[in-house]
Structures are given as structure tokens and as C-alpha cells.
Length: 310
Image (cartoon, rainbow, N blue to C red; front, top):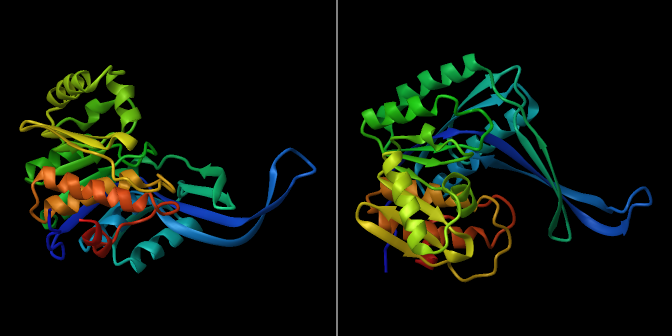
């Protein structure tokens, strides 16, 4: 059995697309007379950090010292996100862009089931992103691990330069990728695609042997030290120079998988920054993901919860 290391001195720098997750909870008692859709009588609302902000919250829940670097709009959602981060003990450098609307995902939940999601988003401008890059470079010296959390919202336009700068500074770089252009992640330490994301890039595989071939080829093409593929009910598999390591999925009732990938990369980063080797860090990440899928919405696994399941 692995023991959870002391994480209190571990410093994580997170850069990526932040968003505000809004939840409207209510009861469904009837179908609308206007269209065949349920009528939700909203009884309470909740706001949670999403995207890279949820990664930051997960790192903080595991006891690490966290800095979050991103772009928000000069709007109410951006102010709410900043407050949520500050309340979680996370140091924030959220650059404001007056032409940008903070990304908001609004979920309507009735009888414990998500009925609808509405997204509000656009892309930040180049000048703000350039200022963020300079901020990133100045903060590298005081972190142990860098997480680049790509949600495809435009906040990581300079990701290739960020990877180069971080690696030149001797910092491990963990990337949660998005889209089909993985060339932009060349030189990172570790990528954490899920099963469907990897299929977009390397195509389908018939069995584990073919998956290993495709993963190894991609790892060499991108000059990665490792590739961690999260595979839902099949667990997660790590491909590295030392070989292939697999962790089966934790058996528990799955309530909501949203944000589980955030928990995986956050736990990996905190455990690596606290001195655990990569295979043991993956095991802790697998256990932490098992905790959060038993919770509704974007959630976290605390250090105490992780210790209970380790």
C-alpha cells in the first residue's frame, strides 16, 4: 500500500482555460404546455470553479500551494470566479480582457439528473495572452510542477512557448490536451488524454497491444517522457520508457464523471511534486478520481479522503 506524502510544501503553477460552472437545482413536476420539455422549478443555485480553475481547486484540496494563471472577462462571472479561487486559498493572476466574456457553463439539474447545459464563451485577445506569457515566465522559478489545462477556449495560444520555457527551467510539465493538433504539446513531460481524445489523434485500436504501439509512437513523436491514458471503466494506463503500467478502475457507484480528468492531472502533479515516482502518483490519481465520480458536478478529493481510500 502506498502512503500519501506530505504535500504542504509542494508548489503547483496552473495555466489554462478557466470557467465558471453554474448549477440551477430544482424539481420537475410537469411537462411544459409550450413544448414537450420538463418544467424545472428552480429552488437553489450554486457556483463552482470549472476548467483549469477546478484543477487548481483539486490541487489545493490535496494540500498543495497553488497559483492559477488565466484570462477572464471584466464581468460579474469573472469576479465570482476570482472570489471562489481566493476563498479556496489559491493565489490568482487572472488577467482581465474587456472584450472577452468569462466562460460560463450553466447546468440545469432536476431530480438529481442534468437536464440541460448552456455554454457562454468566446476567445481572449492576443495582447492579454502575451501579458499572461510574461507573467508565466516570471513565476516559473517558484514552482515545482507546471500544469497546462487546455479546454480549447483559446487561453493557451502560447502553449508551445510555455512548454519550452518550463522545460528550460527544469520544471515538469503536465498537459491535459484537447483537439487533434498534439504537435503543440511537443516536449511536455506528460500528457493525460482520455480514451476518446486519444482516438481522435491516433485512430482506433483493436487491443491493448495495438494501443501500446500507437501510444509509444505518439510519445516518441512528441518527445514526451510519458503518456497517461484515462480509460473510464477500463481504468488508466501509463506508457513510459520504463514500460507500461495499468491501474484498474476503482469499483464504486458512478454519480457524475464531469471534472474527473481535472482530479487526475491535479493529483498526479501534487504527488510528483511531493516526491512520489510516476507509477505511484498514477495510483493515487486513480484513487482520487474514484472519489470524485461519486459526487455531483465538478468536485474535489481532499487529502483526508485520499488517505481513507489508500
